[in-house]
Length: 109
Length: 117
Image 1 (tube, chains in turn red, cyan):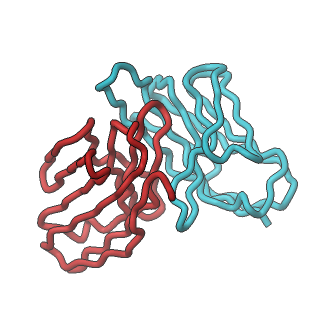
Image 2 (cartoon, helix red, strand yellow):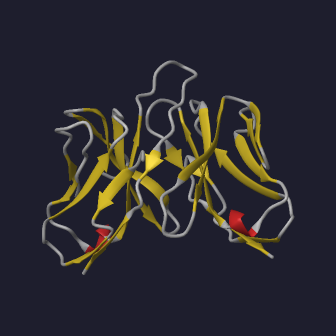
């Protein structure tokens, strides 16, 4: 079993939809949970990070961490075509982050 | 502009011909790392460096070498490339993590697409 599992998709939604992206993990030592967005032919960019459990909101984006279930989510409200990208979850306990495979999101007009 | 640069962006080479991919950051970051990204496998860390002259293996170090002689530069060396090293490579940097609640964003370079024939 991989330490971090993430469904690669693709996930295709209409503009305006609420998008839910998820990852599960197995390592209890993970404390930092991140979401990166990667556009085609670009490097990943940090979107949000959370320390330990709880929710964090930033505009249309909400990150949730449930350490008891070892499950993290990223919600995108009012999705836009410009949100079309690959979203990678990442998590770490000490220095070395472990990335999920990434979920490809397509938001069509 | 704060950035991580990589060169070259695209490279096609042949098996066994030594190559170096350069990485440079202008943010005075202590931490630098190299990843490869392959379809279905995601980002996997090759090597990382906590500071000058301090390097360590990541998850997939076989066939790669690195050096960190200066803080801003972290070249990736493939002494004898093989076709299974065909991949998209990313360099990343961040300021040193410290404390139990701090997180320092990793900045990624634009990527180097390497093809080994």
